[in-house]
Image (cartoon, rainbow, N blue to C red; front, side, top):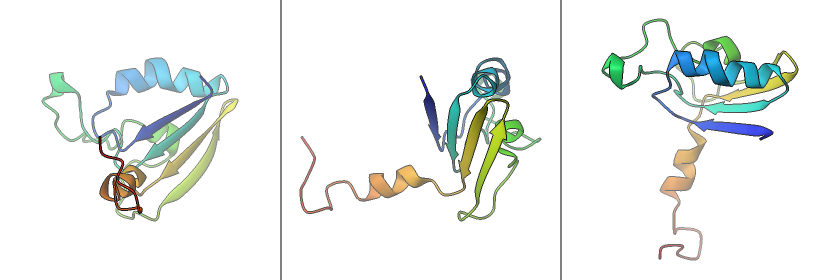
Length: 105
């Protein structure tokens, strides 16, 4: 896998970031993160908001965002991380079937 996209995944455990995603990026992976990814703890943490900020902050350089226009590209080891503050997946979700042809089954 060369590119991993984390599209506004509110729940993302810090141990998964540290143990899997971080080493992969440092080894040359390309990571795209959008929106509030990593804002909440996992099920064991009762999905509480992470008090230290986003679990991906060590890779994105963004611990919290109040602006959907935030955009940040960072080199991390041999890889790169692009952070987009906007939940871009929501644009596709809201536009489903409204582009001149209905894609619904």
